[in-house]
Image (cartoon, rainbow, N blue to C red):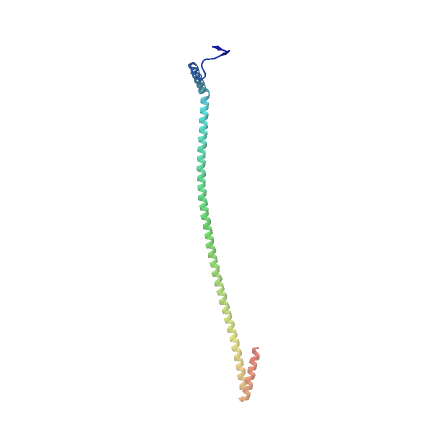
Length: 175
């Protein structure tokens, strides 16, 4: 059919053509066989290697995660032990400080009591010495007064003068 210079082929691309279908299928199968022999093996082996590599990386990641968790657990345990040990050391330090403070306080009280007792004893000794000195002076004065009274006549007027003189001597000796 020749119409206006254009040759029209019968059928369109969408019309089924059994010869075309056959040769397309044969070509597809040949390409498939060639790909299977040449490309499919290396592609599959490469994918398997990639899968193994990924699985190995996942396994290593799991193992690393488990090790990290184990290390973290150990670190937490060590930290807890260190905290407990630090708390123990602090507690012992406080107890020791309290003990030393109590001992020092007790020693200070004992020392102050000793000092007070020594001071009281010293005061008592000074008091005794002063009383002894006073007794001796009073005894000497009494003896001197008696001596003067005996030497003088037993006249009442003279006795008054002697007693007054003795009182003046006592007053001047005190000052």
